[in-house]
Amino acid sequence: MSKRVLLAASVSTAIACAPDSSPATSAAMTDSVAARAAAVDSGHAPVNGISMYYEIHGRADGVPLVLLHGGGSTIDVTFGRVLPFLARARRVIAVEEQGHGRTTDRDAPARFDTSADDVAALLRHLGIAQADLFGFSNGASVALELAIRHPALVRKLVFASSFTKRDGAVPGFWAFMEDADFSSMPQPLKDAFLRVNPDTALLRRMHDKDARRMQTFEDVPDDRVRSVRAPTLVVLGDRDIVRVEHAVALTRLFPEARLLVLPGGHGDYLGEAVMTRRETRLPELTAALIDTYLNEGS
Image: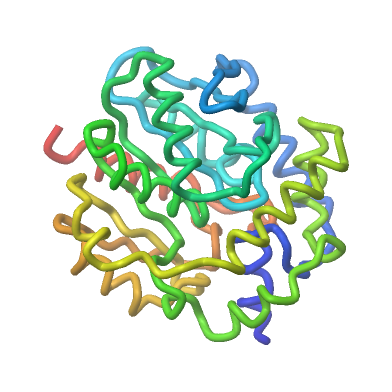
């Protein structure tokens, strides 16, 4: 298996083998947390039998942008480096899904549709009638389900680094997933979870549920994708776990879609904490492109 597939799989599902964390990685995560701390409002909302953690950044007015993190991750892992740029000119609401980080678990599998219902319930709890969605990796699958199941809540959708069909992934991805094991979960993901929730048993349970969710992944029927009413921006890296050909096909399925291909692997354009172990301006540039898309036609 190629190094690209190995590393990308680790971020998408939090279970693949990946190099140990480096000082640069840890420093990047620490810096991103420090940069956000002064501007954050946070809380927990009782939704569908769990206590869902959320953070609110940026302005108090306007259509909010909801951030949905990748599998096995926390807000900080996926969005820590890009969030300050996204929040410069808009309200941003970042959440952690069932069993991840500071959100409690329920006695049920992790599912994209139930997580979508959780986010919908959170928005209603916060009194938000409509929002833009930015989902990355597994979070994009959650965002897609939310746009299908609760269309009135979604103004625009950013579907980033994810697929709707098993053959949308690069070769070797699914075979690798079958051998997922907690011992090979990237250490930065373990550290990020334990930083906000020190219960190692919950960390392992989160890992196992995420692994099972991906091992049992089923294709989303094309008709369900076509039913999305929200204008959609399909985003991926040119060395992502998603085949570029699949991303192009998605732009022909979503009724109103655009395509954005950025340089790098899975999450490099966000400065994702496991994949991106170097200084880069990509998070700032990506935020500007996303902001431009969301403001079009406003």
